[in-house]
Length: 533
Image 1: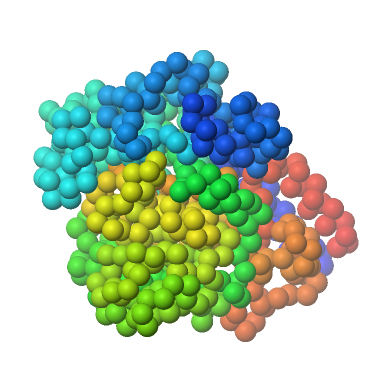
Image 2: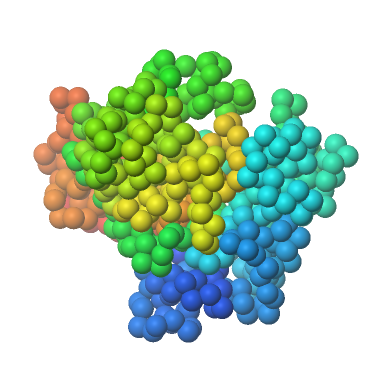
C-alpha cells in the first residue's frame, strides 16, 4: 500500500471517529431578545436575520440564520431592572421562568444547549437582602464566607437554568448563589454534545466542598450528579453600542489566526515567571488548591510548545514596575509603559489593577492595543464585565465592552466581585479555541472554574478558529484537500525544523470537522483516497 494512501486511511478513521462528538450547532442555540428594547432587536436581527426577528429594519440575512429565537416580551412580563441590575426574585420570574416556559412549550428542553442574550437584557442579579453588596468586595467576602452570597451575573445563573437553587437546602442553608458551583465542564476538551442532556431537569443533590464554598453534587443516582450535559452555555452579544456588537459578531465569522503576525500579551505582576502550581501568592495561583495552575506561565508555555505561532510575538512579563506595564501604541501614556505593537489575539493581564501602572491615560488601556479579528480579552480585574446597560465601571477597572469597541471579538468579564480563585483560565481558551477546535462557547466554559457566579462570556458562541498554517494548498479553505497537499509536499508546521508526523497530526487536528455528518466527511475522504491510488 502506498505511504500516502495508508496515511489517508488513518486520517479517514480519525475524521469519521470524531463525527459523533459534534460541536455546538446553530439549531441548538436560542437567541433571547426583548422587542421592547430597540438595541436588543437590532442585535438579534443582525445575528439571526430579519425573517426570525420581526420589527427590525428588515432585509438582514442574519449571520447565523439557523439559530432559534425567543422574544422575551412575548411572555407578557415586564422586566424590572435598573441599568442591567435585577433583584434575584425578579430574575426568576421575569427572565429564568419565561425562558423555561418557552423551551417547554416548544419541545426544546433537550435540544437547546446554548443561550445568547442580546444587548439590553439585564446582566447582574442583586441580593434583595443586601442590595449592591457585590460591589463591595470586603462585605461581599464576609457574606460569601457565611454561605449567604447571592449576587451573580444573569448569564452565569442561567447556565443552571433548570436547577431551583434557591429552594435547595444544603447544610441548613438556602443555596441560591451562596457559594458558586464547581463547573463540571472546566478543564475538559470535548464538544458539549459529548454529554447527554437527558437529566438536565433533574434536581441535583448538592453539598459543599470541604475546603471552601464551592458546591458539587453527591449522590448514588447518576441523574442527580451534575455533568456538562446539565449546563446551558450562555453567551452575551453586548457592548457600548449596537454598531460595536454587530462589528464584533462580524469579526468572529470565517476566523483565521495568522500564525506569523499574531501577538499574545500575558502581563503578570510580581511573578517568579515559572509555571509552579504551589501557593506562591501570585493572583493566578492562590487560595483554592483545585484552581491553582499558574495560568499566565502555563498559557505562555502551551503556545510556545505548540510551535505554530511566531515565538517572537509572545509577550510574557513577570515584573510589576511601570517600565514593565505592557501597553499598546495607540494611546500616549506619557512615555511610560512597555509598548507592544504586534496585533494581538490574546490580552491577559492584571489590567488597570496592575501595580506600577502609568500615570497618564491609563483609563484607555484596552483602547491602546492593535487587535486582530478574533482577539480575546481576559484580564484579572474584579469588575471588568460591569459596564453594560449604561451601568459604568467600578474602581476604574478596564472593561470588556471597551475592548470590543476597540476591535476585540471575544471576552470574559465579571459583573460583581468574583475573588481570585474563580477567574478564567487563559490556557484553556488557548488550548481549546485558538489551538483547538471547540466553538467559542464551548472553549469559554472549559476555561471557567465555576458557574452560578459572576462571569459573562461575550461573543458569538458558534465561532470557531482556524490557523493560517493549516491552509497547505492556499485555497482559503481548511479541509481534507490540505491533508492531501501535505502528503504530496510535507510542511514544517510547528517550526521545529523538520516536517514529520507531529506536523501531520497538527494538521489532522486542524482540518477535521467533527460537526459534519460521518457520511459527508467520509465522501470527501474517499474522493482523496481514489486520487491517491
